Length: 67
Image 1 (tube, rainbow, N blue to C red):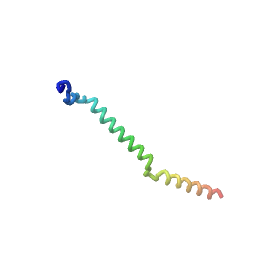
Image 2 (cartoon, helix red, strand yellow):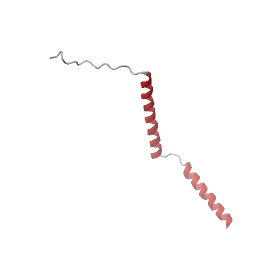
Image 3 (cartoon, helix red, strand yellow):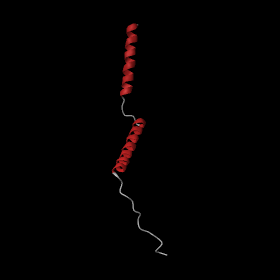
Image 4 (cartoon, rainbow, N blue to C red):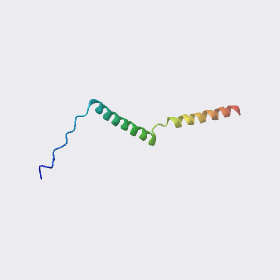
């Protein structure tokens, strides 16, 4: 009965170079996607808001010169 059970670990072949490159490339791609998602959720730059307010100020100056 015990001769029928094979409890030895299965033989797993070593990954090839291409499989290793693919694995690490997928990890790097996933990390990049997470960074991009976090950048959308938590924006850090206020440059766009500063540009918008400066544009509004320029428009006010232009209107004031016309009056």
